[in-house]
Length: 116
Image 1 (cartoon, one colour):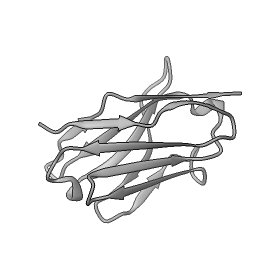
Image 2 (tube, one colour):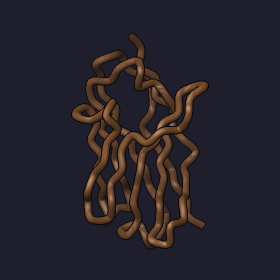
Image 3 (cartoon, rainbow, N blue to C red):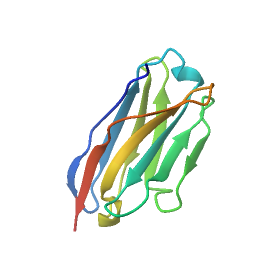
């Protein structure tokens, strides 16, 4: 069973930064696509950023230029660096691992709150 654990959420003022980390306990980490999603109250869970096994990245338009996703395959870790945070970024952020077998594994989520 793959475990995905997020950390790094919290409360920050608008314009500030937060760094989210996700560790996935799978020997297939280096061949997995890793993604960060977020879900605000009453809204759907949407993709924020993703990174492929080869390091190609994809961002939601609303965060491009402010957020950066990266991975360290030696530590089974993916990081989401969030800068210039806005109140609209307030949500629960989830990490997802998609293995080469196309199985999805989600973390429990971490709360990010941006005050104005």
